Structure formats: structure tokens, C-alpha cells
Length: 301
Image 1 (cartoon, rainbow, N blue to C red):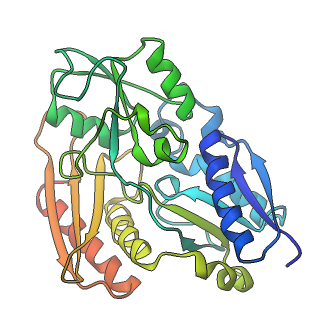
Image 2 (image 1 turned 45 degrees about the horizontal axis):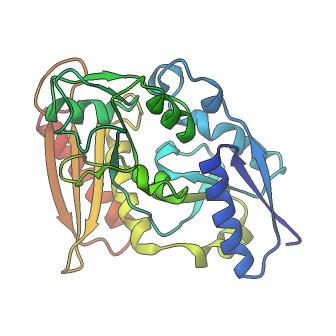
């Protein structure tokens, strides 16, 4: 190929991700260029994603560029990618995962426990909302949209006492110093795919599927496959307060934790854990589906 065109959103974090992929491809000897795009998810900031179409709003314009031949590949934060891709598209690889944890960010408070009663915490994630309420039911949780820099600016302007962000994005942009505390995954279970980057192509581009394979981290891809299987089996919507995180054990098995909570009530979280061999994608998906069945048996819906 003469030049591989990479479609990307134009936020600072998205451009970092695209440039990271670009550098990896260039080390393999490929010429690349970037096609920056603004998505509907970037434009609609006054409503939560669950009310305006879900996380797919961040990828649809990029997929259109692939379909029309204006770009060859698209790079995404995997947690923003719908569980079922449109017909004709495929994930070509999942790169080595960054820190999957959530980060507590605050200018004045060291940790969630240090917040005063009634403090205002910003997040628009239903998953984070139900997990925060389970930990601190006294807090006021307010919506927070926008790219990473916008969210930090709103915090610094005093609109919130603290905000919850993905640790991976802060680290990738050199903002690790803003992290007061990185939550233990057993305290704030991450979203499926959090911290992972995925590359999407048209399914008929066998040349690109082969070309991108050396960049993939198989162990991380299997782990996020299990996580995404939980979400897919539970309905796969960002309007669902669902967490799923998989970890490899010392004996070579894959362990997945999942949690569900009702955003409208103060009911307890449903938490489950499942462990199995996951030597291929089918076994990883089966593990995630087992965890989803356990959630439903525990009362999740």
C-alpha cells in the first residue's frame, strides 16, 4: 500500500491514539497519514450519551469514511465501540492495554473518602454513578460531558469537587499528576474494554487484517473479548449501568468480574466472578456469557 489513511476524532486524546498507531505502523515500514474528523458524539455535549444514541455516536462518521474509501483504518478507544459492529466492519487488532482503572481527580481532596458529605462529583457514566452511590450514597453526582481537557477545565473552574476519569487517558496525555487516587478495580470495576485501543477496518480488507496483526496483543484482546461478551449478552447499551473487567491468573486461566446496579433505586449492586480457560476467542466469549447469566440470576436486567 502506498499510504495507509487513519481516520480519527480530533480531540487531543484521540489524536494521541492515532499518532501512537501511526508510529507503530511506521516502525513496520508503512507510510501513513491522518484524517481528522468531528463526530456527533463530540458535538452533542448537553445530554448524556444514553439519551442521544449511545457510544456509537463516536464511531459512525469514522466508519462512513472507511465505507467510502476516504480512510483505510480507524482507531478507537475500545470502550467507545458498540458491542456489535455494523455489517461489513471488523476489529483488526487490539493494541497492548494501558491502565484500565478509573481515576479520582480533585484539586482539593486526596480521595473519595476525603470528600465532605454532599460533595459534587462529575461523571456521565451510569456505571460510575451506581458504583459511586454504593460507596458514598451521600454524594451529589452531576453530569459531565466533553473531551478530557474540557472536563478538567470544568473541575478547575469549581463546578465540581471531584471528577472520575479513565486513568488511561490521563496517562497517555502526560497528565498522570492530576490523578489523586487510582481506584482499585475491586472498588470501582472498570468498563468493558477500558484502557484498550482497537483498530477497525472494512471486513473485506484482508490485506489490512494481515498487515495489522503484528500490532495486536493477544492476551489483552482475549480479555476484552470476554468483557465485551458480558455487555453484548446483557444488551450492549451505554444506558446500562454495567461493569466488566477480566484479568489473567497465575495458572493461565482468565478471571472476569462483572457488576450491575439499578440507577433509579438504591438497591445493592449485583456482583459476580467467573473463571475459565480462554485460549481462543470462542472460549473468551463463553466466559463473558457465563458472567452475564450469573448477573441475570442475581437480579440484573
